[in-house]
Each structure stands twice: as C-alpha cells, then as structure tokens.
Length: 306
Image 1 (spheres, rainbow, N blue to C red):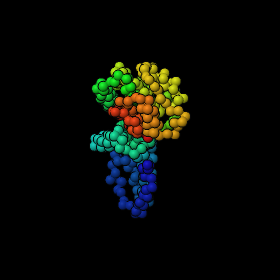
Image 2 (cartoon, rainbow, N blue to C red):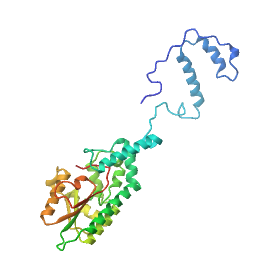
Image 3 (tube, one colour):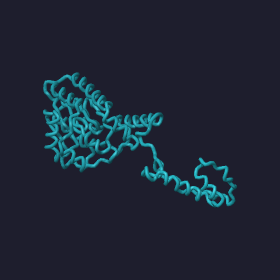
C-alpha cells in the first residue's frame, strides 16, 4: 500500500518561465494577483504545488477532519465490494473449492481460503446450507425405511456429533467460519457451555431411525472429559435415547480421526452389530475399516479433520 506521491521525483521547472501579462488573469481566476507575482520568480514546481496545497488546507480547515475529501491512501476492494463479473468469478471459484471439499478431492487443509471467507459465511448462515442438510436427511430417511430390520435387533446406525447432530455455528460465527486456525482451548470452552443447538434435519433423521428400531451409536472426536456436558447438551437438544456414546479415551489421544473411528467401528462389528447407516460431516467419520452399508456425508466447508 502506498501513499499518493510516495517515491515520486517531481521534475524541475524551467529557470525561465514565460511572462504572464497581468491583464490575462481575470478577476475570477484562482489567486490572480498572487500567481502574477509568483510565476516570474518561481524556480521549482514544488513551490507552486506548495501554494496550492496551503490554499486547499485553508479552504477545508473549518469543515473537515481531513485535508482532502478522502485520505490519500490507495483503497483496495474487499470481497463485499466485488460485483458484476469480478463477483461472479469469485463466487464460481469458491463454489468449485467447496465442491472439492465435499467430494474429498482436496488435500488436507487447515483454514478456508481467505478470498472465500465471505462465501463460506453466506453459505453457512443462508438457505443453501439448510437445504443441503435437509437433502441429506431425507435421503437417509428413505434409505433407513428401506432396510429390512432383522429379528435379532442388531442393525446399527452411527452418528457423529459436532456438525452432524449438534451445530457449533454460534462458535464459528465468532471465529470467521473457518478462516481462523482451529484453537482447541477455545473450542473446549465452547463445548463446556453445553449450548450447541440441534441440527434439525438430523434430529428428524435420528427420531426416524430410533422409531424403526436401529441401535444408535454416537461416535465423536470429543474426549471423555466432555462426557457429562455432552450428554446434557444432547438431551437438551432433543436426543434422548441411544445405545452407546463413544468418546476419545486417553489411549486414543494422538490418533488420526480416521484410525480412531475405524477402530471403534471394528469393535461394534465384533460385538455382532451390522452397521447399516453412518452419518457424519467429515470423511474421517465415514472412511476406513468396518464402513457402513450406506454412508451419508453432511456439508461442512468450515474445517477438515483427517
């Protein structure tokens, strides 16, 4: 960013300036008498610019905080200023990026692209996110109703928690929707408040699979120290019945989410359950070993967990 005029070498004015007849300057001209006196003796264009500058200062002194009508700083457009072709190009770019996120085509990433911060905010707070959640939930319901329930009662459905059953949007709205790097201590403080609201389409899906007779497993990356508040938050949000809530124990610290959740699904299968459905907002919720007969990926362009 440069101040106007910074680094500029003004050219020297000629030592001999053309004579200006006094009568050539009308009474309406800018400072006629002063110019008539100064022009013959001025040996530098800088002196002339100084006179103009001082005149402008005098004219604005009483009515403005700035000498000029706006600061002498080059102002660059922000995302919100973009419109027309530039705005459309940015929207297409960020839509393409989000598509790559949801299809798991991107390499692991830590924060959203800076230029897409406004796009992600508008998506998460707008109708698009809600419609995508509803689409996933409805498709999962149709599938769940098509599953032939066995008499042994061992058909299982696994749910992740964060951004699957409970929404952390109130937290991420205060942290730039993924533009800031993830901060574990701050997020833990949010979790301990126990105020995450239910994702309504997921609540409806949960109620339907419970009604159909699936065994319900909540498999989360939250740690055991958050068990009490997680149970309370789930109950307040409307999730009242489940067969098992699985959180990270001390021996799971340091494991990638894909490995940790695969191990827990392996245990569920060894206990004789058939994992018929699995819902999660991260691919690490769904991939690995002992995958479900059908998996449902919820949208989440705010963060990526490996």
